[in-house]
Length: 219
Image (cartoon, rainbow, N blue to C red; front, side, top):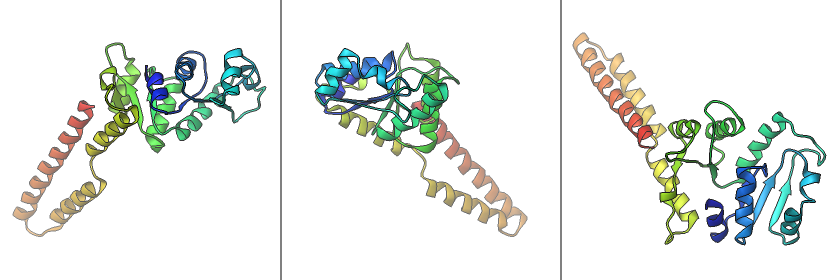
């Protein structure tokens, strides 16, 4: 459904062109008149001769890329490194299913969150994997079927979700100012005054931690 909405909204689907979710997403986008980019880690010379692939290539609606030789066999390391290119090429990334703590999807998502290459959306719902839930806790933007509205373009929905996420993130300048105020209070002379400032600082810190925790749970 997401790939179909991409086609309707004139958004390219970028994937690793692997069998499974990648191929399904690319196929759904192409079937609905959209376009896709497949960044393959192996077997490029084999993929380009497949009937459906050739048809999409001839229609100029599919582009296949690879950072490796067209004859390169599958290699886990190559696939992992290829994931970086997928994230960098995309305006938005969507994790459909991820195992917890292992696998290329998990590692790629964590790397993207670390480097902030592109906003990371994560599918949520009753049948979502444990890895999905953990990625949301680590900063991924939750995405469910209920978020899609017929009266609003997909790009608008994604942009609004990104803005909501940013609005709940603590400002770095605010945290630095807090640290400076706490340091200033500790340096003041007098036992009574220093103790009072320390209490105020502790209460302020607790409030900020509580807000950050609530935001994470709200995601």
